Image 1 (tube, rainbow, N blue to C red):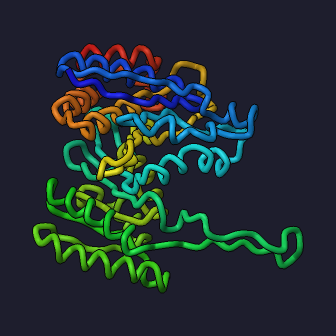
Image 2 (image 1 turned 90 degrees about the vertical axis):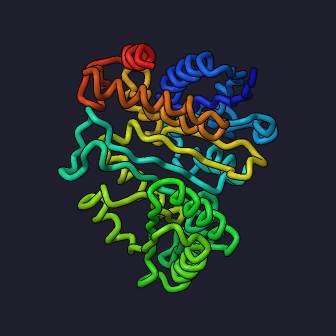
Length: 352
């Protein structure tokens, strides 16, 4: 029987509340399909640890995770720790240290969830945002000077490498080939004069190497509008670190709730563990109340199952998500209901 070694990082806020439901789902589907999980929990890798010790995780944190098959993360962040401190102290070092250069964010309108967008209907909106995850606009190059003086300045450099852009484009084109055969590239080459024309050139180059995929490109401002006006037209959307980040959150809102949105941080070559996380954040306003929506974590666990080589088990989980939304009126408050996290999880497990 296959056993997978999983690192659990609950993190902050509702992260500690949504990981246990994901574990329950994994154990249930694992029994059905004949595999198990050995989970190691890193409960104190969090903002609380930062406030106590000055670090989000130990200095050898990556070494502790290196032998795992995957990482399942809850959430990171709390109001009394600046976001750039919490993210650059835990999430981003894992992404970059393990070369998780693909950030994969599926977007789907489920039956039973009303989108705030009139044209976004169940069965029609089903696409994936592929975000470059380790370079681009989120580089570490830059700095501050003349602090406190009238001429104070901040400089942040974007870094686009041929290797970095090419590998994420090849992943996105390959994904499009396995889905609907359509790819849209997010750009802004009419205004950003160096990096985005370079991006566009590489899209055209990689597009020629994938003749079975029909592709186009959209400027990011127009693309954001079309996500709202024509969400059903998209299949795979690929963008830089910043563009992919913004577009995927917008798409989740179009789908009805950012509370159900999953994400995968992938090292496609599998040289290092990949990491899976809901994108809803730590939600400190509801933390500790037992009402957090676990769907984002559960869907992220399904992405993990697929990555670990269990696509049928992953489909079982996403089918159960679709069923609990379509066949029951059990909803957590973010979806307009009154169910607790535990009640919602129980309803989903029954259908699973």
